[in-house]
Length: 79
Image 1 (cartoon, rainbow, N blue to C red):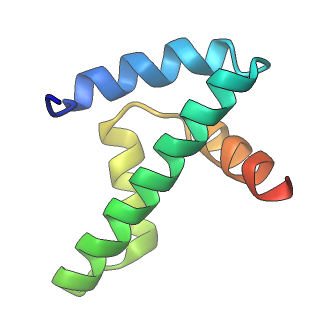
Image 2: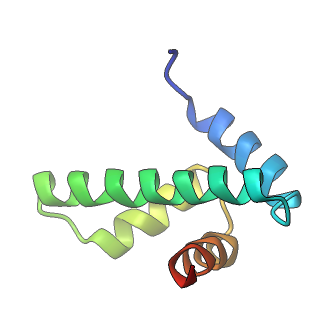
C-alpha cells in the first residue's frame, strides 16, 4: 500500500465529508480522525510538544476545517 500524501488526505476529507450522511463515509472520516489524533499524540510524546498546537497545525496542513474534524470526532464517540 502506498503512503498517503498530505494533499491526498485533504482531497479524501473534502470528498467524504460532503457525503458524511452515508455510513461508509462516516467510517472513513472517523478512521482519519483517529489516525490524525494518534499521529499527533506520538509526535508530541516523542518531541515533548504541545498536543493541541500540533493537532491544530496538522489540521491546517491537511486543510481540514477544525469544526468538521471535531464534528466527526464527537459523532464517532457518541455511538
